[in-house]
Amino acid sequence: MAAENERSAFDRMVTTISDDERKDMLDKVSRSAQEEEDDDVSSLPVNEQEYKTSLSIRLQQESFLRRLWIKIKSALFNITPEDIYNTSLINHIAHDVEHTYPGLISHRRSVLTLGTYEKLFMIRKVQEFFMPYIESYESNPGLYYYYLSLVVMPEITEQIQQNSDPYKFPFTKNLTTETRVQLIKKIDDALDSLPESKRTAMYMCVRSIEWLKAFNRMHVDSLIRNFTPAKECLYNLSRSDFASIAKVMNVVNIPGNEALVALFSFYYNTTADNPNQGDEEQLVSEFINGAHLHIEEIRSFSSGLPVKDIARLVFDNALYDSRPFGGGEDWFVKFKSQWRINFDTRWNQWLFDYKKYRVQIKIKTYFDYDDLPLLPVRPWTKLWTGYPFRYELSMGFIWLFFGTIVKTIEAVLKTLMLEGDFVVKENSAEYTDNFRFLQNIRNDFAVFNASLSDGGEVAAALNSLGHSPDKDPSSRAGFTAVMNDVEDTAQSFIEKAGKWFRSMKGLIGAIVNGAESQYYGGLTNWSKIGGRQNKEFKENLSAAYMLIDHAYDILTEAEGLDSSSV
Image (cartoon, rainbow, N blue to C red; front, side, top):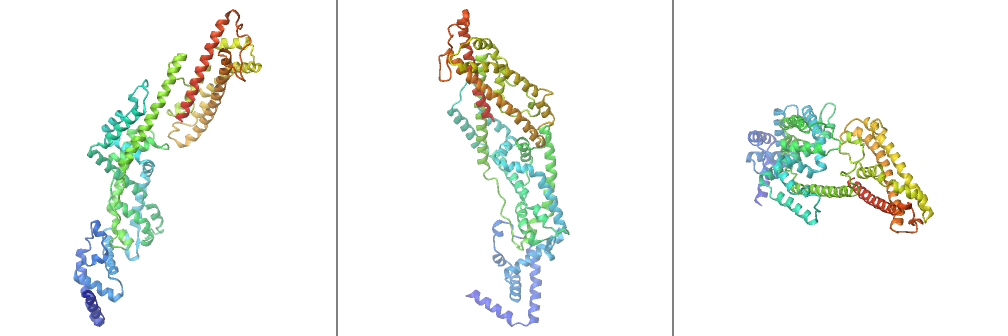
């Protein structure tokens, strides 16, 4: 009630004084209030709570004379005291900006001018520099955090890797699910007990990269497009874009060298279209130098353009402020998850190599061959060392078997073709085709191998592409097309070889093991074939069957491994 009486008395006073008295009072109060404004307005609220305080409440904190001046103007011009107070603050901010940072705005016309345009154009160049690295980071933050740990705490990271590495176990040991659980627990325990200083250092780096990500998302490009040919932009046209800039540039969090080194290393090692080639250490140094130059541009932008004040002018809100910038709070969850992903990859690779080791042992046991066989000529390795040729093991073994191993049993196979009297007459034709296949596949392999050798069609096509298709997108399409043709040919070889093995197992198995079926039968002259060497023939044919059976077993495993490695 007292407040209502006070307002009524004030209203009566305003309505009863003359125009001259009213003007004289307004001038006096205005001069007095302006003196206080010069002292107070430059000290805008600095903490979050004050920024959330409404203009109405803040107005009550002003001096009596200033509040009186605002009330008089409110009554005279029928404008709310809050709007008058806001306009007063805005005008003071604009005056400050125009005198301290000339060329950025023309507040009288409510426009951003050439100076702001030039600074925005400069900062757009900075965004372009960091863009590919930030896009790489956004694609997999967890993996970046792992690369960051290699820089921030390399000794700890290396120790965790060693303690949880399945490769510390020999292939003679068959790892169990229990072993896997134990290794994962070692990772979790080590990460959960990281020194606080290292966790803090990691988090600070993550926050800075998150800030750089937000910096690259600022709507600088669209704001630049709103400028006229005269390089001016109305306040109201810049609001939606300037809000993103104000939020990020309110508190600048420049990444340090550790975060930047990890950012480049992550990009360099994980981006297929990475144009950087050469020594990684040298490239890191060049990137850091370039990053520092662009970071200076960010500092220049921050110091040369009062973003918060201009945002208040743009939004016509003297207390406008952006929410505190955040990001990266869940970094540790993603970091731990990435360790699990890394471990699963390593674990699966160990299982794959373990199976390869078993195949290698079988080849050594059955055929006295020490290594995993590979094609004699593989021209793609000259261009792309790590290229995953889809049929690496299968084709290597087919080349070994039909080029070398089968020759040890070819004599007994030929005797069977020439002298064998098959119970099922169709078996004779099938067997003869199979025997001729041996020479045909060797001829086909010779042609295939010649195409892969220097001067061959495939080798020439690959050589014409230049180098490093793994790094150069322009040559990768051609490389892929050539390799697709090579792999189609390889697949045809594998299918024909598999068919040959299955047919020979059925034919010879029915003879030596009595495993007759509706398709395959024995020989009518089984006890006579080979004449006086009948016993030796039977033994040799049985040995040939075992060799073919073992070979088919290895080819089947090799196909499975090739399939799982794709």
